[in-house]
Image (cartoon, rainbow, N blue to C red; front, top):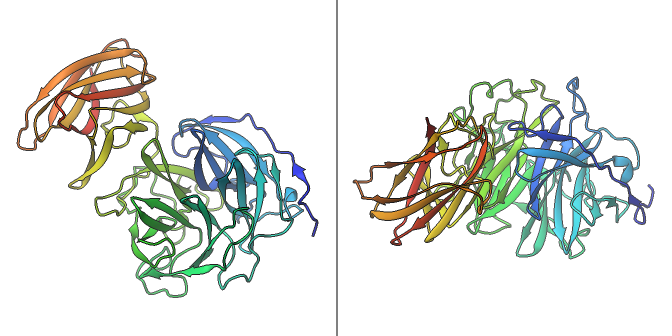
Length: 449
C-alpha cells in the first residue's frame, strides 16, 4: 500500500452545465446523492454509474456537481480511486459524503462495502489529498460493514454514521480523520425497510446507506425513504414511516422500479436551504436500468408532530414552477418571516413578521398580462400590502396592492393582482406587509389571463 499522505492530487474542472428538473443531471448516472450548502451554493457529492449499458454496478469514480439554484448543475470535480490509498483502477466506488471544518473539506468515500477512506481539500471541490494513505474505517471494525457513511455535524462536533442492517455512530476527532471514540450501535425500535415491510425480516431489518439530520431538536435517522426519530443523537430511535407511497408518483414516474418495489434503492440525504427542506434520492424511472440511476430532489414538509409528510415524485422537481399548474405556497425556493403550517391533510405558509417574502424562481408558461391569484386566509381579519417584484428582492415592481381581508369562518379568499409586461419565464419575489400586525395564511398561487 502506497503512503499518499504527502501527495496533493490534481482535480478536473469540468465545464459541463446542465439545466434540469428531475432528474437533476439526466443520463449521467449520478446517484447516492448527498447535497450540502457551502457559501450559498449547493454541492452534490455522489457516486457514478458508468453506463446505461451496465448489467451490474460499475462505479469507477466519485463526482461533485454544483448549482446556484438546484436547477442548473455544473460538473466540478472527479475523484479517481487511483488518487486515494486504493491506488488503482476500481469499479466499486460506492457512496460518499463530506464534512466541513475550519475552512477545510473532508470528503469520505466507500471502498465497496468494505472500508471507508477520506481525502481533504481547501475548497468544496478540491484539489484533494489523502492524509492517511489508508482507510479511516477498516473492515471488521464493527459487526456491520464499514461503508455508505454519512457525516453529521451537531453544535460544531462531527460524527460518522455507517453500516448495513445495523448502523454504527462515532464522534470524529478535531482533525476529522480519526475517531474520537469506539463506534456505538444505534438502536432502532420496530424498524422497517424495503426487504422488511411487514417487520418480520430480522436478518435484513433496514437497508444500507444511513443518514442523520436534525429538525426542531429532533434527530432523524433515515435509510433510503424510511426514517426513525429520537431525542438523542445516539438513540434509541423509534421507526416512523416511509416518505414515499404509491400515491407519491406523478404519471410516468412510478415504473420501472427495483425488484423489491418502489421503496427499494432510494439512497439519498436530507438538506435545508433558504428555510426550505429537501430530500434528494436515487430513481430509475427514467433510465429503466437499476444499474444506471438518476438523482431526484423533492420538497420536504414536516407535520406538527415532527413526522415527515409523504413526498411527491415528479419531473418538475424543485426550484421550477409551471404557470399552468397551481403552485403550493409551501413549495417556495426562498422565504423569510414565514413558517409552514400543517392544515388538515395539506400545508400552508403563515406570516410571522410584519414584513416577509416568498420567492418562486423559474416560473415558465407565463403570458404578458397574466393575472396572479393568491388563495389566502386571515383568521383574525386584517389589512395587508402585497408587492410582486421580478428577479430579486430589490427588483422591478410588477404590481403592488393593499387588501383588507375579513374573517369568513375559515373560508379562503382569492386575491387578484394584474401582472403586466411579463416574459414567458420569470422569477417572482412576493413581499407581504402586515399593516395591522395580523398574520396572513397563504395556501397557493395560480395564474390566469
